[in-house]
Image 1 (cartoon, rainbow, N blue to C red):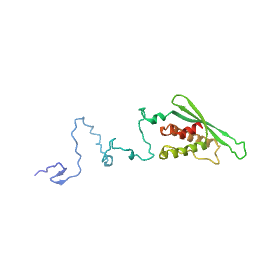
Image 2 (cartoon, one colour):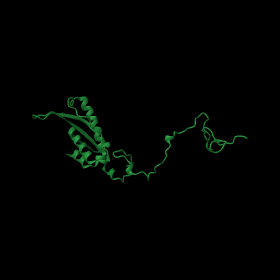
Image 3 (cartoon, helix red, strand yellow):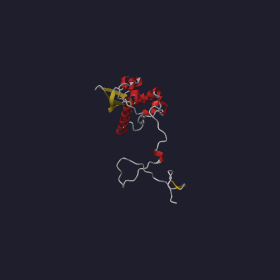
Length: 194
């Protein structure tokens, strides 16, 4: 009696090795030199979540979330007022009174969305105060707030150290001022206008 192949891949009831079953296709046949594409089992999702099943609770606290803010209907969009921040240079101020040491003042330029510019001068300690107050005000946003460049005790007036600090402070301010969560904060306004 000839062997009969059953739909479950067995021959006469005994299991045969794995078989590749090709589904009929109305599309043009692939090149015979192209190997078949087989996805590993861990690539296949066992379940899917539609947008309606995704909840705010499933987002990790402090995670960076991408969202479309171009609709103009979001209150956070109204808080955005700057398009760029950079620290141009610095000035070393020598202390003239006994007990008052030298310190560095950073010249910050902020470009606003309406085309104007703002210039403020700040010391490193003021950046440190800003970060501390922002963390107190927004405790779950630490991931969106980069650390400040480290303090320097011995080499704090060397050009290379000051340049690295300038880059780090500029990056920090860009992350704060261009973030709609922080840009409308009274803490930031206090930093900029006092």
